[in-house]
Length: 117
Length: 193
Image 1 (spheres, helix red, strand yellow):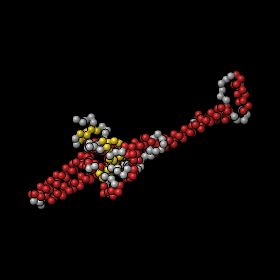
Image 2 (cartoon, chains in turn yellow, red):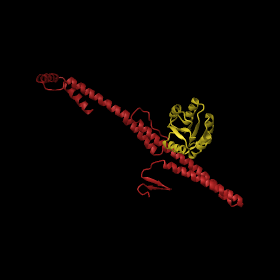
Image 3 (tube, rainbow over the protein chains, first blue to last red):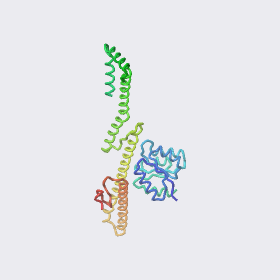
Image 4 (cartoon, rainbow over the protein chains, first blue to last red):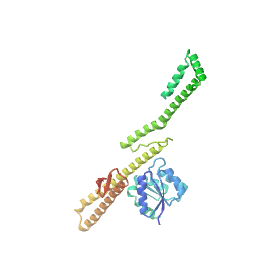
């Protein structure tokens, strides 16, 4: 069964590509946020099953937004989706308790992560 | 603003010593025969108001529009030279905030696209390097190992192809000016088959 997903990315082109990837996987996009602050308030409003979170965003970045979402809801399911090197940020991902980290150039891997839920 | 200054000067000149009496008489005459002349104190007040209003308007336009526009032009010029690390201030409280926000979004999209290309190119290069090493090893292998090496090479070529197709998909996400993308080629929009 498809999940209800909130996409967080400051790039409208990336949001469009991620949306297509997730829709092709049978999931429903219930909201889009272009920065960390919007991500937090949309999460509280929509309560998605999964959040895809970019890291580098102007204003509040993805790690700060994920921290705040997890403080609000300890059961929040967050997958980081970024162009940055995974190895360098794997500790932050683990600390926050995210589901995983996917590089955007292999975005389809996110479907495998979500399928395990 | 020039008109305001002229009215002020004219009113001031009418108040100069020796002319005050004549101007008062003229005022009285005008009042007696019903002519519709603007009283001098009122002219001075109006001139002063116009002057102050002009200064205020100039200050408003300069501060809220001209200076922010100049700043924006500088940042956009830097962005056009590749400085995607520049950001426009979109919280100035002026009408230009929407424009600044959209220009920032444009810059963000450009950066994301470039990073995707960077990562895909890196992964493809690694795959090609690995393929090259397998090819070099092929000569020294027995038949069964050669088959395995061939399979590994085909898998790496498949991966590199998939990565390059992702780059093409990224490019297809954009709407291009006067360019049409078909198969592996780019055409001017009027020339596309």
